[in-house]
Every structure is written in C-alpha cells, then in structure tokens.
Image 1 (cartoon, rainbow, N blue to C red):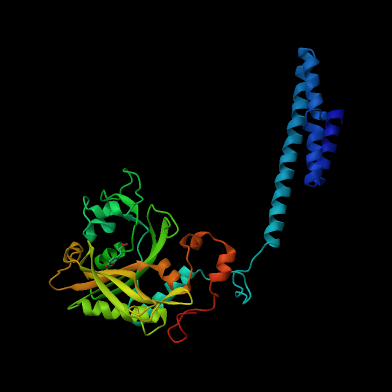
Image 2: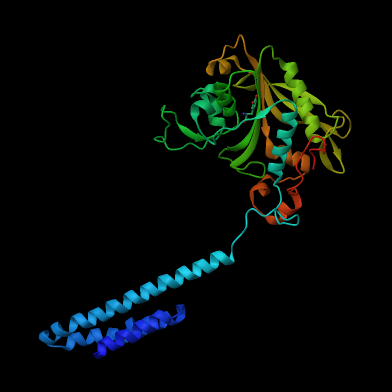
Length: 365
Ligand code: DAH
C-alpha cells in the first residue's frame, strides 16, 4: 500500500466513525484551505508534465473519495438526527384535550356558534360560499350592476383584470356575505332558510374597520313571506342572542339594491354602569337606539336573477357584522384587537373550549 492509499484508508476509517463535530474537523483538516489533501493537490503545480500525468489521477481520486465519504457520512448523521427529533417531538393527536390546556375559543367563533345554535332552533341551516368570489355573485345578481354607485362604496379588493373565471367574470374578495344568498338560491330549490356566516374583505382600516371582518347573512325564500315574518325572526333572534326579553326593535326605511323595501333595524339600548347595553327602554333617560342590522324583502330582480319566478317566491334577507355583535354583547371596544393574535386579549375575552353554546344551557357561555 503506498502512502496515498494508506492516507485514504485512514481518513475513510475516521470519517465512518465521526460525529457531526468530528466530521467537520476532518473535512477542514483534509479538504480545507491548508488541508492535507488540498496541499497534495497543490504539489501538482510544481511537477513536470510527465510527473503530473502520473500522479494527478491518484491525488484527484483521493480527494473525490474523501469528499464523497464526508458527504455520505453527513447525510447519514442528518437522517439519524431528524429521526431522533421526530421521535422526541412526537405528538399523539388522538389524545383527548387536557382540561387545563392553553388556548381558548375566539369571541368571533363563539358568536358564530351562538348564532348557528339560535337559528338552527328556528329551522335555518348554515350555508357557506367562497371568499374569492366573482363580480356576478357579489354584485350583478344582487341587483348591483357595473355602473351602480354601491360598487364603489364597497372598497373592493379586485384581482387583476386578467384573473377571470371560466365565464369571463372578474374575480374579487367578497365584500359581504350576500353572494351566499345567490349561491344558495341557484343550488337549492325553495323553500330556503339559511344563515351564512363568514369572512368578508374591504379596503378599509381604522378602530372600527379592519380589511377582513365577519358578517352573517340570513335568507328565507318561501311562498307568502312578508315583513311581519322578518320582524318576528329578527326580534326572536336578538332576544335569544342578547338573552333579554326587554329588547325593542325599530325598523327604519332604508336602501339596499338587493331588497325592496329595505329596512335598517335599530335596537334599544340603555346605559348601565357607564356602558351601553342592549335592552331596556330606549325612550327613557338612559336610553337610545343603535343600528344592528340591514334587511328587507328580497328584490324581485334578485329572485329573477337566480331563475325563480318572483310572482311565486318571496323572501326576506338580513345581514350584519359578527364582530360588531360580539363587541356589543361582550363589551370589547377596539375591533383591531380581534385580529392581533395577542394571547393576553384571548385569555381575557376567549371562551373555554368546552363551553359549547346551547339554547338550554344558555348561548351566553
Ligand atoms: N350586504 C350588506 C352589507 O354588507 C348587508 C345587508 C343588508 C345584507 C341588507 C342583507 C340585507 O341581506 O337584506 O352592507
């Protein structure tokens, strides 16, 4: 065995035994700037062409063999380390959640669960739609044509001009949950009773507006539906939600393109301990009115847009902000804190995971 073979055998033996630190030391010692193998390679420069031709293959071969062995050893060490970490950090996802576990239910989720529970009791199903919508569902079918000023009012996040769906419709982030009305009516035959909670997006931001927020939509389509049904439903819902019987509603004429007539719904509040609470006598000395919902009878044009006969089918719809409902019920005052992900806020305002809202146990948690 000549000197090179012996050097190679020794290096490979050390490499095979090395841990990560030792391996790096061997690499520097052999292949680093002044490593043994590097120095050998440098001697080639001082040789005569004949000598070089004779020596070069063996020296290059040594370098390659050592570099390959180091790479293979490193890969093996990395794999072992990963394996050890995976074993060490293993989580059994099938274990039950500990009662004392960190984490709580966000007020928005809690309120959505409460709303689903209340409306389920009234025979409403929960419907969903995509957050990435097209402008037909978000606007046109809701009687908001291209030139309608309401389009500008919605501060819409549009996708690029070229990002269109198969039917050439412009894509956008839905600005309200109302397109779920359209999706539901085009997919299921009436009678329809649904609520649709979900995220909506508008290019707007201050203490009471965030670019993403939550709405809930309600839709009833049936025969002979009138404003009285709307009023009773909203009153029943608000009483259940705020868990008070002394809740008074005021319907004010308003305008939404997709309803006719349109009404804005105010509820009475009273000031208790310096804080506005829903309920009590709005006409008393501590009372007033607060707007909580937009609603109305579904516009015949909307019913026709989904291919139903407005002479046969009528309905009512309503929409409101889930975050705002949560703020009113649980007394938070800055909407932005909802989406900061601050654990202290969540510990304070969050709900225990096991406090599932039920009508019998109370939706107030
Ligand atoms: N989509 C409306 C908005 O975002 C809210 C709304 C108003 C929804 C009236 C309705 C309705 O269903 O009937 O401002």
